Length: 474
Image 1 (tube, rainbow, N blue to C red):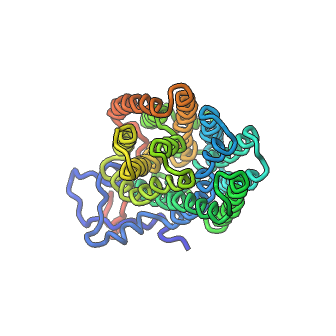
Image 2: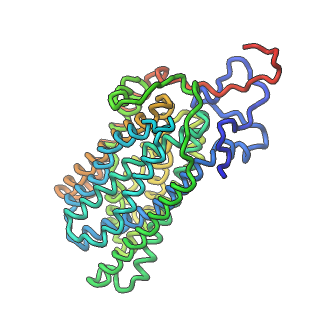
Image 3: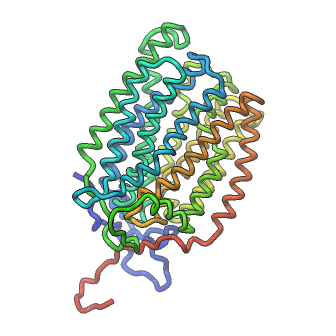
């Protein structure tokens, strides 16, 4: 059922390796050895079936989530009359609550059940289930505090599932191919992000009535929330039925041994590892100046005067670029180094801010901003998880990934609050200008941090090819 799910499946290797040449699996920045003319088979071998199933779960779940996210800014700002500062608070809550529970999710997923296996799937299922439960609740709440509470529970589910899901991806994949595997997963996830706003747009049109008319508005939004709930349940079912229960790296692949149940303080102690500490610091530093998607789309819509009924379509541009670039950029990260590409991705985001602030206007500007925005995600999202997986042992993979993700989420929560306050005080354009200047400074600072040697990362030697001749000795 699961394509290339066995750890014995490997990408084709070159028949001869010159002395001194870097091994691909031992050095994340080294090129992956592949047999000539076997590119398609190499890709399939590098992406286990478990990754494809988890990608399907994320695709279905993202259709549900992005249906809501695509209409939520207009629902709150236009329908309920919320101020930009209030929206910034609610938008920040989505990241803040996710961050608060992400560490707990990673720690609980690493703890072993009665069968001796980590509980990655069980914790991920709880997270997906919570998010599915929240979608129908949006049909019942109509005040900002109650909507904020529902969003907080929804983000709690996201926080619980993210680290276990990424841990399962990293554990199922050979170290040399993690960038590509995460790229495939993020591409499938983004396919859902692409379909979600489109589905919301179609549901709104089919619900009847003008989007901003009183009756049509409530009817359309409620239809989106109802369809979103049904799709979310489907994602949970795929996870429960098709993702394997036991998934662990073979002993010795990460150069570490973990005995007994991992403790929460042991997970926090991972920050003593220089490689993980530097990566987390950079994720926090850059997250502090990363304007949320919702604010960016609002700026695009208001600056160019787009009709509000086309607002749900704006995320499609970002999602399309992310979908097309996730796999090639993930493979590029395996070759040139994941940290380098992560930093370059934020440089691309800076270009998107600059284009939006430029005197240029028209549809080409919109397309350019959304293309750069999607390229930013393709170069950073899965790449950051793959880079973090290189620095922590298998027994604490969930906790290590949660640490990096929590730092980034808290930073983006702070950015949402700060940007909402700036928008209310000085206007959206000025707030984006200040954010762009801050991002430029943070990119320069992160470049200095990442220039430090990465030798302290947890070594993950490649699974060696045993010689066929029994007389050959190490």
